[in-house]
Amino acid sequence: MGDEVEAKQDIQNPQDVSEKNDDNVIRELFSFVKILIIFVFIVWILHSFVIEGYEVWGPSMKGTLNEGDRILVFKLPCVLKHFPMPESWRIHEGDIIVFEGKGEDNRRYIKRVIAMVPSNTSEKIVSASENISQNIPQKKVEFSKNRVYVNNNLKEEPYLVQEYKESNEEDMVLLHPGEYYVLGDNRRISKDSRFFGPIKEEQIIGKAVFRFWPLNKIGWL
Image (cartoon, rainbow, N blue to C red; front, top):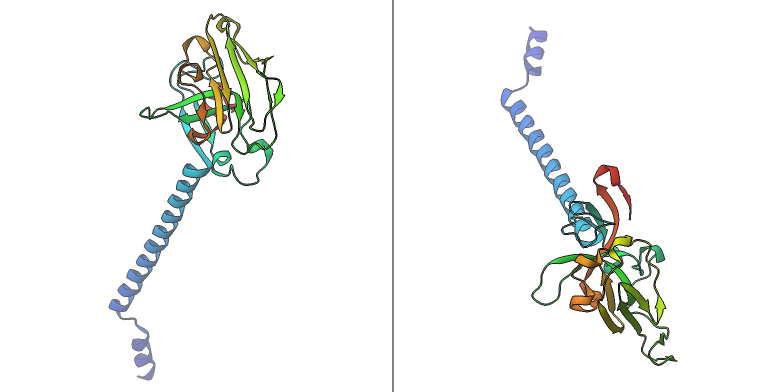
């Protein structure tokens, strides 16, 4: 009789088992939601401040980037522009960038940086127009017959396709701190600084660093 009583006492109450199962489900659901929130937060941080994917529209960069190409744009050079960072992260002349249009033009453009005077430039730059050292850094940029001259020096542009080098357009600007002169690689069909002038540093979203589509052209830019 004693053994039979002890055996009966070991039998769990079905209601207790059900409550334990419910608690386990709630804990697992809470853990899943927590992981999901962390994942979404990390993706938001990366998308907003580190790197973002873009699809190329239009023929203005044809020869380097074609319509439908998909690229990754590195945003940290703009986010951390006032902080120390590796020099390779910064935007340089010759880099391809994505930037916001001016005024009511809310489009985003992708062009190549031809000349620039960053806002944090501290050294003096020789003015080509006066050939003297200026207290305010500046650069003279001339576009003439599809050749670019920066401070009267011809800029080598190996990324251009030869067939795009025929033009009678003329343009001349003087860049001041925080201004960037940008052009499309397809000079015959490109709305760029020849049309809307230099862009401001705060318009820049980031620089294009990698093409991931199409697969046969995947690689660093």
